[in-house]
Length: 316
Image (cartoon, rainbow, N blue to C red; front, side):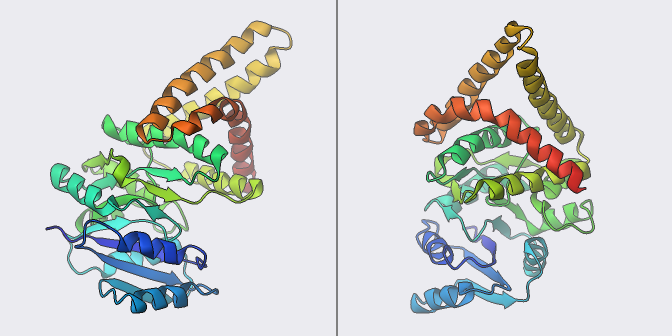
């Protein structure tokens, strides 16, 4: 049986760390180990994690405390410290809630596909309905593009790879970066023509936290947009440019509709397409209650995407 290693870095996650550990303790695939690194938290993250592991006597949960070096460096050090290069490494975040069959599904997909990288599904918790609905589009692109052999996105909250594949890809990644390691890894593996497979199962879903405020949400999306100039994969670049052009065209059509109302048909087409794509995605991941929010999200989407792009541009 494959015994994967789960790596997660935690920074000031005292509100989430215990529920995260409980979710991993409940996994149906018992043969795995957890490598949890406290990245210099200044709250009670480490003590809560330590007490939970000790009180439940979980020998395969390993906890380390380090000085704050940032998530990407923290992950890199943890990955490089694994002795067996053939070990399947699963990456997630300490504020997430993996499904109880998450490890089982990731391992099964790895056994079936022998992929160098696994891209798993991520959803935002239901308490943030707008963000959860908006994130459906990201998941549709992430899993859909990977399914047709041209992956455009991946998320550090749910992915897997072997150390061997990571070491090969690392040579083609930027030398220094503080965020975006998941996308840079994807680019490198595509460049090396490695096998990348999506894990299309609701039982492999990892639920992540949504932004608590509008400012935090815009800041998050701005960080994501700020990574774009560093991408080198032409498919990812082209997809980004097409997205920008579509959103700009929608805003231009709305302004132009003052003089030519027929331009509003462009928005009608967009809304219909969104309902089809996001509706199907919501159905597949059993989030059908989000369908009712597709219309407002479709209307707002072009404006905040454009806003985050402008902010990211001027921050450069």
